[in-house]
Image 1 (cartoon, rainbow, N blue to C red):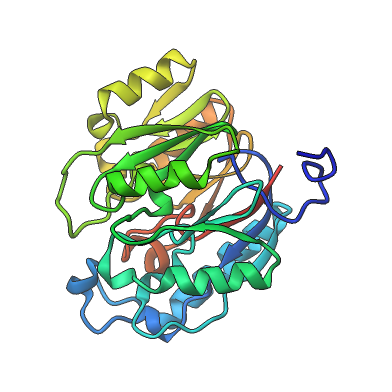
Image 2 (cartoon, one colour):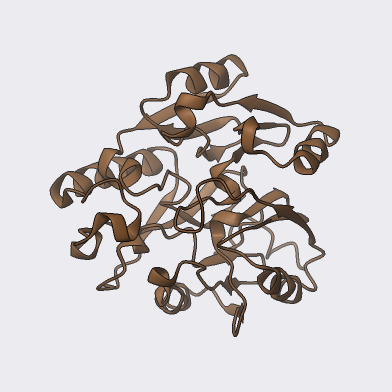
Length: 295
């Protein structure tokens, strides 16, 4: 791969959770986010659209102040409330986008809209999951540029893992399967990144009680310091933390213990208010963003 492609002028490539966030895709809440049946979507309540939009605008302002170019996913997707969580329908590698396939039936179709938007932005689609494969971005955690952990649960299956290996062939990426717990069952959203967020090359925040032991051991052996999230803050998305750059991160307001632990570990922690866009619908700052370029 040419040095010019890997330089700062390249328009896409995000094989990292922590390198500086340069270009990022978001979707402002629209009428589709106001669900008729909150329980059917596994939301705690129907979001208030006006407040949700204000929260999202403030969230976007933080991303911009951090130096990211913010791009909007503007296609209206009626009936797809979760479309604001743009992290899940695709990943963007140094060669282009891999279009995923949601494990949640209500989200089917988001991947096609995402493929169209990425193509408009000049990001080539190199592979699209198909047939029985399912995988969501929330289950895909870059340990480093050449190592991708793949959660195996209700949202990402074995065929999804197999096709991801095919899609990433040629990028020298090792895939590490991580078996996820049942927890509260198939209707809930439990991604791998519901349990852990990586904040720099040697630091992560995680919820220890649900961490698979082999994965915890793997990260420990690699030298990661694993900051624990307390029980009370797991429910308020304390584990869902977006790295804006190594050691600089953004998390949902209302998790003071986790924030204090991260600051003690040397992180600069920013927070946003997200009662409507995050708490009600189980989607934190990582879920709200699809990095297009890091580095």
